[in-house]
Image (cartoon, rainbow, N blue to C red; front, side, top):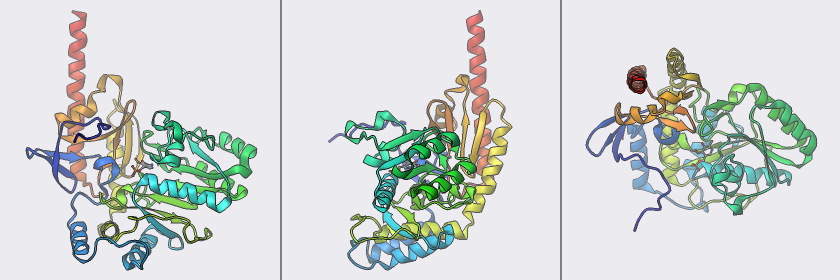
Length: 391
Ligand SMILES: Cc1ncc(COP(=O)(O)O)c(C=O)c1O
């Protein structure tokens, strides 16, 4: 049987990993500045994470949500404490799209409305509602097309006010990433998030903070939406939550009342997933990884800003992007194949950095050395080509 060929792959097989490094089948080491789509939060194969999963596996891996699962409560308590959202309620599921799907659906159950506000360049996942709220028509199948989603320009307060003025009593929810990931590392303004909070309050709509990529400490705050100093009604989480173990969830504000059967899942909240998620939180707390993301992120951003050929360096904590000029368009590939560094991208010309939150200054310096050398080599090549043409 062949694999369904939907992913453009780099011709590299990664077979082992530790911390911020991965190794290919030939034993070649790579620095991982991408964390496999922002998933690696505490570092690859962290010993505490491995131990917790192994210990849990020997006891019980799975039983369905028809019995009490004590480790779910332990996870909810720890998550409430570390995120600072102790009064919120936790619903566990399996992926970022599923988290957003549940959040959008829950909002609609709560206020009985159908319209969703989403923003330009947003990405919320590939399930039916999540993809309908994603600003990329090429991944929306005809069956997912709906008039229920209104797209507005990101950070445009006038457009948001006008939309609420016109449709206020129809708006079920507003969904927004605190820092857009797939869209190219675009930070939501604090005043924009505050306005969403106010308009949702005034109109009975639900504010959904998509924290799938920008959450779990990556920005230097537990949720990047927290920079605005206002609470969302629902936070969605996935990626960094399990450090590679598939686990996701939504945090639900106390005023939202649950009802039996309202939401559900077979695998969500299984014992093994909870063990992985607890291990992640324990390491984040013990190793002060949110502080590390903040401090080392600032260090990296400042160093990148000093490389003048890179434009519009931006981000928070260890969620960083910069624009690459046309003459360096091979930079990402060069970093990977010649300098053995994984980075991410956002079309058409953004490099995204989403490393483990445990990334050290030493690793940052190594990355910067590789980056500067790669830029130097590409620029010399460019100059040589230009002088050849002139001859
Ligand atoms: C902000 C955001 N929301 C949702 C998703 C979907 O998550 P998943 O791929 O786990 O379904 C992603 C994935 O990249 C994301 O970046």
